[in-house]
Length: 321
Image 1 (cartoon, rainbow, N blue to C red):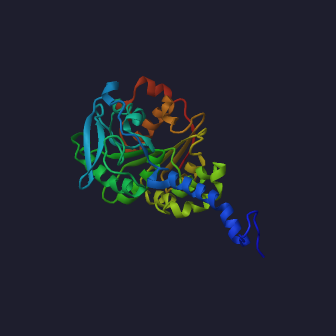
Image 2 (cartoon, rainbow, N blue to C red):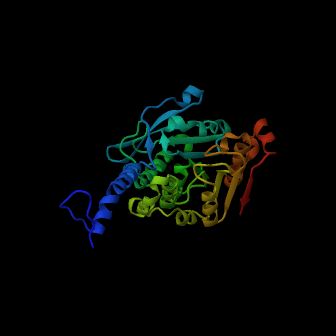
Image 3 (cartoon, rainbow, N blue to C red):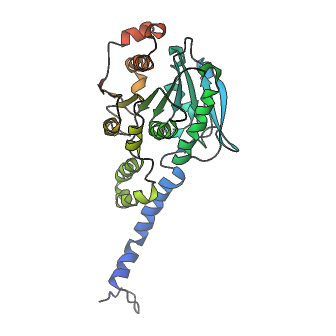
């Protein structure tokens, strides 16, 4: 059987005719997904220009340079905590912009007696190179080595705190490096539970990309497997925080990670909070300080402020084991 189009002298088989019909659509879909996913674009959306420093907010800081590979340098800031310092917090930010946009998530911690080291992934801000999921995880070892060299961090525990993409990277990074660089606790704000899964969700949300969601397993590596990696963190305490109204990474992702994690583990679902907005609430900040006091076994009285004491009375819902 053959199909004769309107132009004379040309005969096309049905299968070839269908292939020609769908070729432009297929090219559009695959091209769009390649643009979306290529060079890590779905996960890493860097911006080069720094718009502010901690000094602009009257927070003491110093520049930090991290060399994860020969000739590749990551830029960061170290914020010394107000004495007595309870721990050093290593902060992994979300997928867009750079640390100057994300610093508000941690600028409040030094006055609560915590050192903070925040840094940019490759290609962000003043950091060189181009980010991938793999090198972001591998670079974490150099970050932890840099923390150990800071005089204010000597002899103090380290807490890893990640938000959004940074929270998911933190799971894999701590799992890989914990034997060499043990940490005292892991705090995960708005993580997604699976790299392929979150891409499939986002692709499926765009109607004209839904047919190519089948290509996600080909375009996105199967590793790291976050629900396996989070189980490896035990017995390190793991805290998951997620806004109940998060429309970017639904709270179900944290629930999945919570059930995969070993004990001790906690999950806080914060009513009314959107993506990475939970810690904008003073009550949640106060509860986090109380949590860190408990898991680090540090005296809370030395770091309690009147605002902290009052806000302990209002707490988001959550699970603890």
